[in-house]
Every structure is written in structure tokens, then in C-alpha cells.
Image 1 (cartoon, rainbow, N blue to C red):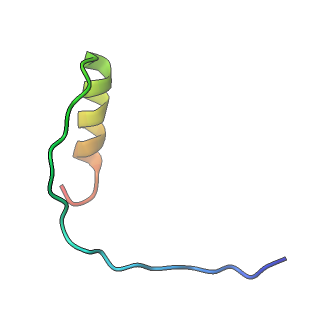
Image 2: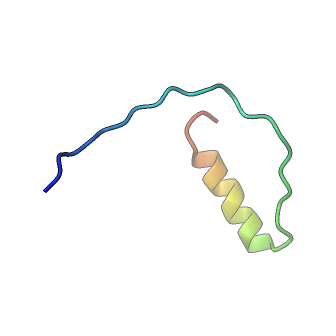
Length: 41
């Protein structure tokens, strides 16, 4: 059995860009709810 290897990486900075939301209302709502729960918002 191999030993466990933990890897930690540094963040490179904020992301910038545009996002196109899907036309389906339920998918759009789920995406917005998950984005609101994400760390750093």
C-alpha cells in the first residue's frame, strides 16, 4: 500500500471573466444558490 501524499497549493489571485447563465430556470436557480454558498463570496 502506498503512503498518503497531501498537496497544498497557493492561490494565484481572483478570477475575472463573464458567465453565461443557462436558460433553464431551475438550473439557473441552483447555480445561483451554490454560488452564494461558495467560500469567498
